[in-house]
Amino acid sequence: RSVDAFGMGTLALGVLYPDPASRPSREEAMRIIEEALRLGTEFFDAADSYGADGKDFGYVERLLYEAITRHAARSGEESERRAVVATKGGMQRINGQSNGWRPSACRPDDLYHSIRASWNALGGAEPVFLWQLHHPNEKATPLQVSLQGAKRAQDEGLVSHIGLCNVNLDQLKRARAV
Image 1 (tube, one colour):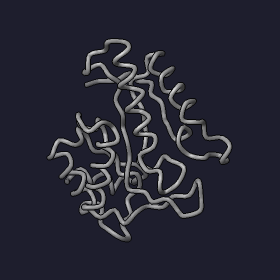
Image 2 (tube, helix red, strand yellow):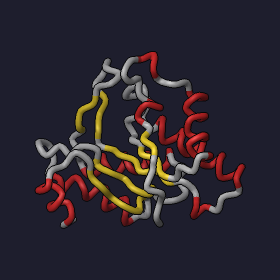
Image 3 (cartoon, one colour):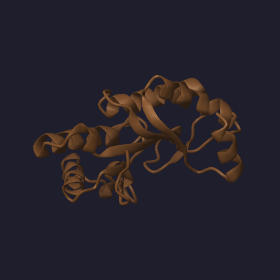
C-alpha cells in the first residue's frame, strides 16, 4: 500500500509539550485529526508513549483509531483507503516529568507486549501499518535481540512493517539481518 507523501505527526496531541497548558483537550485533538483526514491526510505518525505521563500509554493511538474509524464511516471509505498509522514503542516515561523519556530495556518480550498494546489501541483488527523501535538501548539488550519481539509480532500479523528510529548506520545494517 502506498500513502500520500504528506503525513501528520501527533506528539503535540498527547504530550504536555512544550508546557502542560499546551496539550489540547481530547475533543480538540479529535477535531484536529478529523480536519487532517478531511484535508486528505492518510498517514499519521504516533508512539505509544504520546500521552500525559507513564499511565497514559496509547492515548494518541486510541484517538487516531477513533477518529479514523469515524471518518471512514462518515465518508464511506473502503478499508484499503483508510488512513494508516505508523507508531513507535520502546520508550519509558520518566516519573514526574511530563516531557521526559528514556529508552526502555528493549527486551523482546516487552517490545512484543508493547506492540500488542498498540495493535489493541489501534482497533485490534488489522495489522499496524508500521511499528518502529523508538530508541534502541544496546546497553541493556543488543538490537538484534530486541527486534526478535517485533519480528514475532510481525509473524503473528500484528504489524505489517518494522522500522527504527534514532539509529546509526551500523545499527541499521545489523537490524536488516533480523
